[in-house]
Image (cartoon, helix red, strand yellow):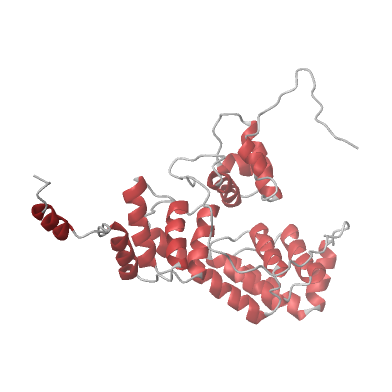
Length: 315
């Protein structure tokens, strides 16, 4: 059985770059929706606000999805540079644990009366509602309440874990239930189902956040966030405990050779040093000096000159 595109007379169409098609198996459904929307506008500019309005998502998430394609070199944005090239090798990341399956939302949604009944009959659920409204600084709508009940009763997220998720979202100024739901499901998929695991996750995220800030500082990146591909490089360097000083030294070498910032180029330098066991600026500088040192001639110049002077045939 074969499928093909139906081309209608007078129907509109838009092109899809080959590079975009090559990334389809790697992107999420949300990233694909944003790409199709951007491509449908041809060469007209768009913005996170336009995307959010048309696709029914929040501007912050729209920006993250657009930046994904900037990082792949498919879209461009003023002040945001895409990677120049894909590195041949990347420092390997820690193998991911198998994902959990998310239960499907029930077709029949709970009524407000049912939501209130669940809150009244289960003190743990009532506590989540109370803490969530306090942390997020809002009174929940029916839709918000339905989301909380679904996460607790249908997905099976522990009440204390959900409160931790909400606290984390508030700490990064993401206070919508849409973002809370997305984060809670991501944590659930990755096996974070106890308060200890949730607190450890928060610690790692905070550490990564501060690490990204440090990397941006040593790479002299100001006024913008890292795009997804840059974050991948950044996280790889953190996992392998590469110091900010060494990253800055690699950055200087990158600027000397290319005249501009290139995460793939810097990663190649760091990968080479990592494989050679180089961990400090002094060791890296010594290696560069050894490379730059001219090779010693395989013959003795003084001895050759002496022989030439003694040889009567050479005048």
